[in-house]
Image (cartoon, rainbow, N blue to C red; front, side, top):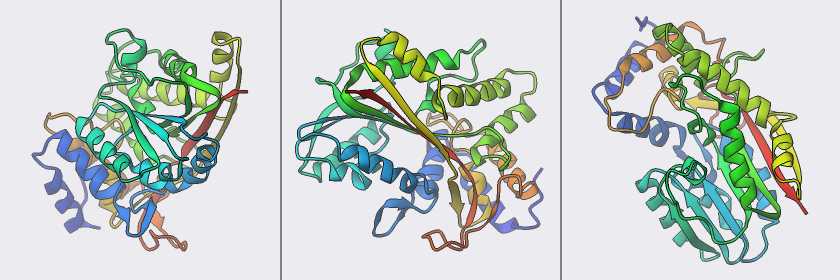
Length: 341
């Protein structure tokens, strides 16, 4: 159990916040109230993380290459924060297509598009990316080849880590083969994902998911599957990613290029307990209506308390919006796959 002596009041308050609620409600507490809490007056900044700000220069450069009346496909689109911090600068007549399983997030995204007269709503598919290439459904597809495809922090849902005999590399190949085929010549797939493998820098905050399942479900495949998935992401999409070889074989009449780099980013919180909450952000909290399992949060809070150095926990001292907040490791990888002219 948790030793609450250091931040007893904060920890107890956080546990009360999550006690008896659904996963969907917990999801809101994690993302809306903490991670994606906006910095006033700064459309590209959020108090809980600096990943969006880190991605911005890369995305801006790609957006500058979109022709007038070009096409963008945002997969795993979320609520459209990318509209406010990046797509608002797209050329006149840019058509924005989206795929997102959550209907309320689609609605929020479409509302944001209405605020920018240079952007036009394209298709809005309420469903999973896998629907397109697994043949289970016939989802609506963007009408024209895409100049830019955004796949930001959405690959976590491509492989179900609770299943036996997973094939995460094949799942990545299938997903990005489908997306690559949609690209116009000169178009790019922009990918960002958290690197959750332990490294010399320590453990990523969301890497606690693997440690939780190894501790509470030692006889299940969950923890080993997560490690396999983390490794597959880096092999396929990380530095010198092998996805380029698979795409080159499948699409022999095109030239595929890949650029990838690992970047140190962070989660931030007003308290140590906020960092523990942010550890739930990947495999430890779904967005369904089932009751949230409080043992997950208890484990994460306990880990933050007992192993602060392992996750790089320290007060932010830099001249940034989060100065004075607690910060911890959450590195991510940025990858760009281009269909060369």
